[in-house]
Length: 49
Image 1: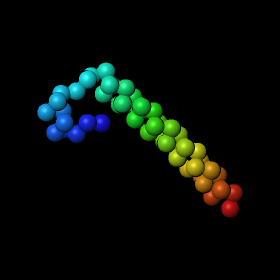
Image 2: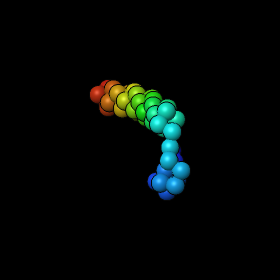
Image 3: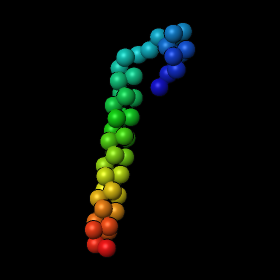
Image 4: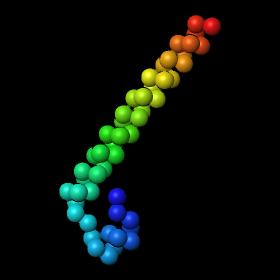
């Protein structure tokens, strides 16, 4: 992601920025799914005790 200063000086390519944003959303979605699985596993362990 370009900094605000870079965008102010050079502008930005909308297509490239959109691709970067979609990649970040995908990364965050995968991270969220992994966290949800861990949460569910811990919740199951607590219920078993």
